[in-house]
Length: 256
Image 1 (cartoon, rainbow, N blue to C red):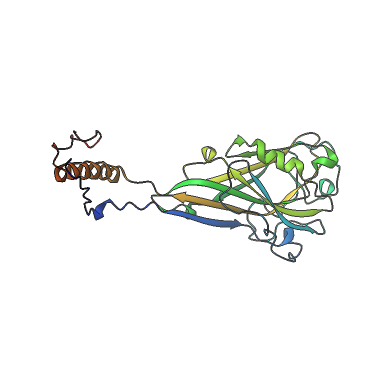
Image 2 (spheres, one colour):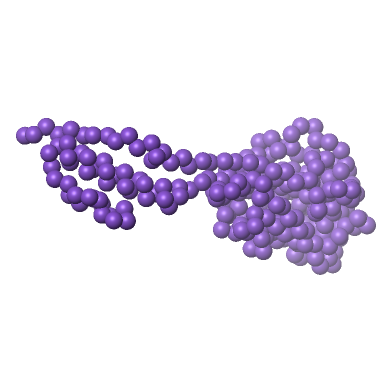
């Protein structure tokens, strides 16, 4: 039997680097709705990036505070503002009776394009919300949340699970389905309330965590196919077998 020798070709051009990146952006000030300061990091314990769609994590900090309040100059639009339902026919808590309240829906639009470098595609997006005074378990007025105009059942369920009587502000994060994202890399969060609209709420600040990756260029994939053909061909030559050129287009296997 004739000895077989495997040959390896030095093909440095075949090094294909797939780069993964991540970034977390914050929108609004961590100022307890403009009423003070947090005793520690309000996000501690929550995951800020890389969550799968619908997965929720929560911070360990719950911060009570006074009210009423209203947005200061320069606040991120939609934060530090008391909201009630778009149709309010009742008043169940202090927020819903304050002069500072406005009707929903609460609209928060976040531009995260700076977290998506050119040539990168999004693999996950994690939304963080410092939610304040949501009290569905107490008052039974259901919240409705949507992302870019698409209802988000997991986010709605999380808001309906919060019992922030006090009022208390508390941060949580949730994975957003990349299929709901917009091509301009902006995310629009809408929160409204059904029922009698009389359970007021607010948001202190938000975060968006993005992970991205670069995909190999089609030309690079062609080089991989070509290299496989060349390696197979050279191996057969050295082992004494027959060989022929690789087929055109690099989409087929080499001849044997």
